[in-house]
Image 1: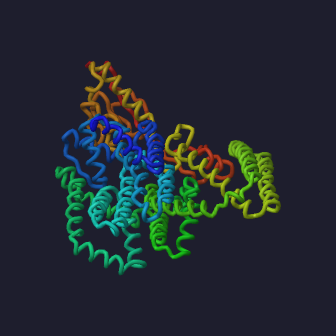
Image 2: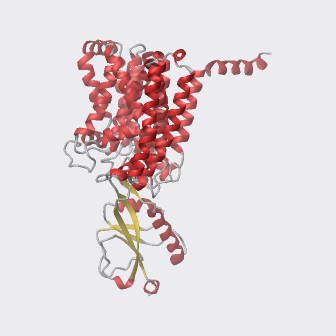
Length: 576
């Protein structure tokens, strides 16, 4: 009797546990997983990704490596992954992808502090974020640092009610300190917030945890996690120096020369990629600051500092923006729920739904004419754009006088929110998945060409023809900024050597040089060039060309190309 009842009891307890809220989190996690994992290895690794992955792969092969300038935590995870499984582009991006999924669940820890509805909407914003989607598909430690920072902050807040959470917060903080330099932006924001608004409370809480022995326990646990994660299980002790070097990388943003990204690039990316998040985030920040909510002030300081930092520093990089997304998402969640509670649906009559539908149809028409202008740039398209735009303005004014401005404002906000959601999904897809040869890079100026994979396939076929095995043909690669890229994609070749320069009387079967380098014994070799990477910037775009890039990420201006020449010894010479 008891045995028969156990499965029933288990099913009942599972149904009781699986609430609508938890099912919603599961749905968001499933969406984020499909959205971010789709075609994860479709595009080649960037230079930053290759530097990280190649070092981990060399270590997995038993070679001596140095971790300086890398994410120690990502190196540890990649080395273990490459040792246990086959290395590849998708596998190099696996752990940032997992961090990009985990960050969507962290708001669940903040339900008591910000509310269940706000936490769920925050998770939705994090799952939809084009910025997080893009960098979760990059084999760098930036999203891992953002996820660790959000987890540490959530656990510190939870520790005010349960002191046992202090140790978990120390673990999250330790993981952040060995993930990426962005963690120091969050630490600076938290430190400033503590001094400005909670100095006495933080000091009192610290003394309380210290008296209970929680600080000592957290320091020991966090230190152990830091040490094991930074040194790859105590096997690469220079990982401790690399972890300390993350602070240097963060501070070096002030000392580096201009990286090519203009000062307005972070704000432009937020406006283009995260308009919905930014609008509701500003609304939530204003409401919270007006009522004196200290939590909102901390979040606003965190988000503002994370946006201002890459704006002011000459060494700014696109990944610096990642640390601004978690606090912005929480603020947007607060703003979205606050507006929803103010929204009186009974006042939004059926006519409002009709107005929203008409505005949607006119928006499609406007988009068609704008797309036409982006291609041709003629005055006729400008005149055609004014027609639906004028009708939209007239419709809003008419409905405002007829149905009341409150109802009109609510209908207009709902329409803009729906439009912002569609734009967010479109941008997220184009930035992360749609970087084909007809589209220019959106987030980064530089991207790796798919021809680098063709180069590797070409040499494997050549090796099979010359020596009977696709991986045994000796290859020499001339040292250059792109040599690590070539080494990564030629990692299956057994005999790849990096040389300073080709020697006179070169006898290697294959030599790879930059485009401008010519082999001395040119008669013995024939060369074929491959595009390795290209760099393109929207600087200089005007008029319809700028509109075309904003809408479709297409640009007609030429890109700077980095090419390599594969010099192959003629078969008759190699036989001699």
